[in-house]
Image (tube, rainbow, N blue to C red):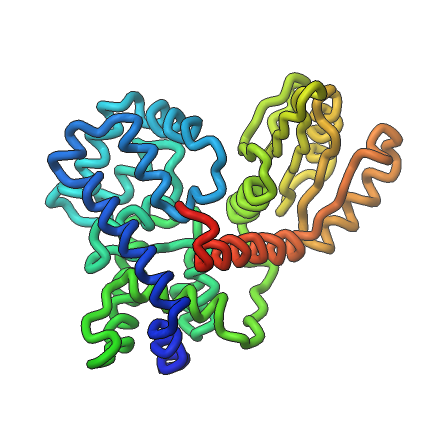
Length: 341
């Protein structure tokens, strides 16, 4: 199997062993939190511990806000515990449990849910996020790599699990990895994407969905130390895709506003950004799109003097690159023991 030998060598290194040990600690902690006994008495403190053990929320500075969001999104703490119990312990099919949980619990995305499930039972569940998708693409597993990151169905998740179970069987090594699980597969995919010094495959711009780009903007903002939020309504009445918020001493709150444009009306996008800039706390408004669409936006915006020195243009390919650098930085810091989940 491609990259298998170098991956097994990496696992045996000091750096690789340290990384594996850290992940298994998270596995043990999440299994403890989500045991039947502890799940029945789960409180905000337990949810905070859960969030602290998930890579998906490594960058969140204020996880208390996140916990409150989960509870409200489920209709209360008791409802959240009920839906977690159904997801983890119901006898129904995974596809049914996964889809029902996503319908009933807001604020928990695919990356978070699948990471939680994988730590809970790495024999039966796998992680699904953009990094996994890109690693599969690099390995030539293009069918799985065509699935959406943020709009995954339970049926599609079951299919991905079956694919990665086959990958697990190929990773077996009698001395180093005699019985690999899907957490080992996730580690392998991490290695393929971030450690192997080989030119990455180019992913077409068209493969990036609106929600994918929003997720990257949130990740970058949090990585830079901002409070990053999506679907925010500002004082001026504009509802925008992403806001980065900073609180700076006597200056109060400063905001940076982002609107993602994949397709649709450019006039509507510019009108929304103009409304957003009327909020006195907004420092810059940013249009995010591919190169072709950005040229169209620039042409339309050139006639709007009100936006002449306030509108920033960000190519989605640059967003992707910076997002990868943020993830790589955090991974390296974690491997060095400088950052703990």
